[in-house]
Amino acid sequence: MDKPLILILCTGNSCRSHMAHGVLENALGDIAQIRSAGTRPAGYVHPKAIEVMREVGIDISDHQSRNLSEYLHSGARTVITVCGGANEDCPVFPGKVRRLHIGFDDPAKAAGSEDEVLGEFRRVRDEIRTVFGAFADGYRQGREDACI
Image 1 (cartoon, one colour):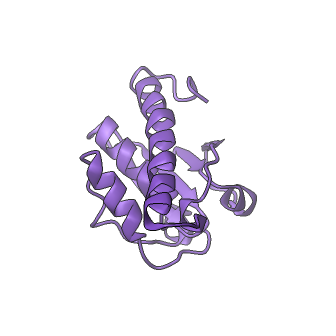
Image 2 (cartoon, rainbow, N blue to C red; image 1 turned 120 degrees about the vertical axis):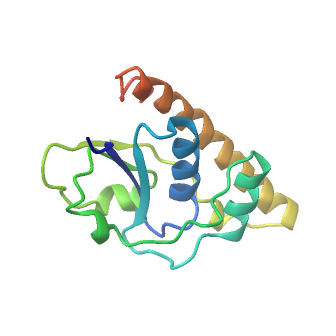
């Protein structure tokens, strides 16, 4: 039996969606497939997203920025948007798909010193870890929307 696919969408697929992807993949192990994509992919994973995830023991350095069109007919069971733009632009996926929106600030838009920008990436990372950690707990118990 195929593992259910959880797809995480963001506009650029460079920061938030990859951080959520890494958190869920780490938390759920092999009980689900986790993928991330963008409505207008940036073509790279932000180096600071990779850095702050590495700080908490999650390696997303091999992730790639992908277009959501790669997953339109993937049989995704759950689609989670993590930014307003992706939520607005998200197409209809065929079949029975649970769609959730959990918005986070875009750390790539942070301004200031290097420490201030990294601080913003860490803040968003920690919010994502809290929310997606709770989602993973509920998912394992068969309650995918328990934390939303």
